Length: 469
View 1: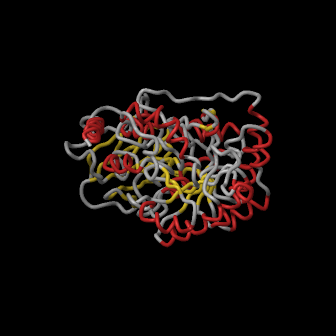
View 2 (view 1 turned 180 degrees about the horizontal axis):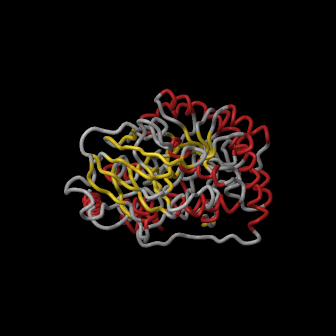
View 3 (view 1 turned 30 degrees about the vertical axis):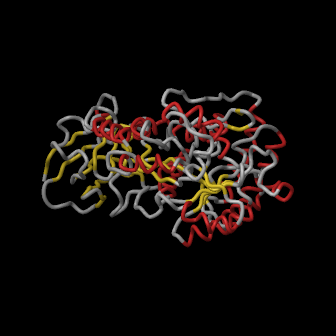
């Protein structure tokens, strides 16, 4: 716990400095940096779901209203900036532990990503960092804790054979093989296991439940959900029971999938979300064809109202390590991201992912932005933009509307309306006309708190804040 205390002290110290998380000295009275002020936001052009409209919004107790408030009001002149809801990251594992929570939060806020979903994590570490997230001055995050898999299934070998040595021991010291079981993954082999281990699965109060389906087309033959003894997952016949238990407890279910068969099993079982688009991880033509979806798959997912996380960049950072794929996003304190650059050899393999993304979008399946491995979801959305499958408006809505709502479905976020959270990004230019403007963030407000400026010059990059009535 000493490490946690030190990190939290560092986080608070960072909030008092000049990073993107900070409020510049003098811009707010002492002691009020984390309190929601009453603001009038004038001269901004606000995103309405289709375009940008000039209007005035007020923030009262961290909520938006069009009604002028009583008493002192701080006026923020937005000088014609383009105002969008903050972005989301629907799949990443990097909000993880005391050793990195401050730097990860700063990265996300810098890129305008306020909402992050971690669909598998070490329960102990997530509980330690909860005081450092879900604050007005930090990112908001949700956690699944330990995912459910079959005996020897993914992600067990990843944690025990790869991450234990390469990531966690440098930070924590020696760990016995098996330490991660019931902390980062739970082995479930029968329906009786589900019942017996349910208290363990829901310990630490996860925000949702994660299940792993991996090559489930071979489950009939092998009695598991995978061909490779080092890469399989939960038997698909168990997923409906997990979904029923989770839904009864008020928890949604996210399913890891790799193939079209995984996709079908998960959708038919009633999961709420698929953590990947099939085709994100393929090693050749045979894998690619196993990942190819049909129009019927898209129609089924639409009918069942299942959303799908894009993760188009995830496979590029997963080199094979001893027959098992490691995750580039699991950086140790002294390690660097593992980047794989696309080559011409990747193009035929990537085509199935592009085809599946296009098919799902055409079928009306809700797509949300998540990278799985990247520093933030900015890398994912820029890669999707480069594929040319979605127009700028569609991508923007996926990132700032659909993704935050998927992460926090009960909160009033992802749009500008009466009573919604007073959280937004002010961009220098119109991202519908030029999508690169999503990187030109000039102001960040979160629940009525000013998070700081970017470096810039001229009227478009300097908003005025003053006291008024």
